[in-house]
Figure (cartoon, rainbow, N blue to C red):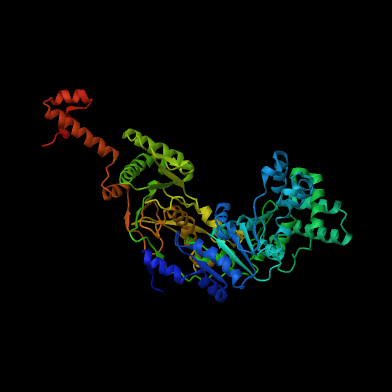
Length: 603
């Protein structure tokens, strides 16, 4: 086992970046082919990614680079896209320009898109559109890719088309492509498909109504009839289900007829049956309603791949993508030189408990936030999305009660620098790629982020048939409180599911938290972090951990609202006593009992 290495401080970070340049990554790719860069947020993954994109072409190691990220915003920050290298064709695959389509055509297009009828959309809408000469959309996935050297595309394409990588390589006329994934969303997306019996019947009728050759019509009819009648056992025949070739003009003819006969009820399944024919046989199944369920994960086709993510594990990538990633940095930990990471290991921040405990939680964080702002520091707050409005409201209520006029908490979307007011932004769990808060000093998580057992199970086993699934659960331990993913039957303790169940839980939960706190760059700069999780911190752990909110208050010398009210009452009572007012009169004036007066009397 390799001893952990901590990279902390500007000098050691600069040395690490120098020794682990894009050139170093390129050399690792030529040896290992699949490489995971799991540097934490802010260390320099994006910088290396951009350098690698251009170096891969300059070195002539690859003739095409495909870069994919979970959001358009992340893609649009890529340097080679903003400033394309000379003589390099860069293609940015974008969403359909709905505004250019116009309201009516856009509505029609949406109807085609949700039924997988893109070819019909181009035929019936794009071909007749008055804006077609200035629109990139019809040729975006076709001739516009010819000769492309760098292609940027959102990871959602892999959900729709498992052969997306091969399609780009083919259309670009490339021979040796490099695939770059920015963030690991591609490994936790759901790639299972379902073909309903109604869709099979409708497609059968459309095929029979078509003018295809007797051979093509007969072959497709036989295939669809067999598909409709097959049992799970028959669907798993390894040699029986290779789909007959279906060409674009044939797809257009069949789907046009299906759309004409059945209207909005018709869904194009012709791409799905082609994917079904090459899917993993053990995971195919016939459901109770007659639907056919099967896996359709993205097909890499053997191209060298680097994946940039600080919140995933090689075992997960192996299970979900079928690729063995080399992980050269698994023993490296990054930490800002004076970063202090606090964690509250308590259940009061959970979805079921937060709302009723929010007054005391938000009162505590409001005190600390106010204190830090008065010290000249900038604070970023984090909440579950559904609680953001509630948290903003209670925070501002606290500030108003304290007579604070120059500080307000706002959702991140409303944040701006102001001369006469300090705005404290609040983001929600799940945000990625936002860099506007990287110079903030503190990040406080106001509640916890967890997933359900069903979400965990589906994240691991969505590609498997029901009879192939292994029962998983989320176990909780105390001192400190922790959540772990486990299998319920120990006879499967050496299975691939057992190997990934806890890493997947940590990815789904702690991975999201790390992305949130990563907005302030705690792994490369000195920051104050407070999380609210019943999970282990990555690698070395937390600097301070508390089992309840009171312990956190004591550490920061904060008082509960009840304690502050009591202290204020004591001060008021003792001042009145010092002024010579009798206890009974004090009680009457303050609306309390004489017993309460005596209890608060000093000495």
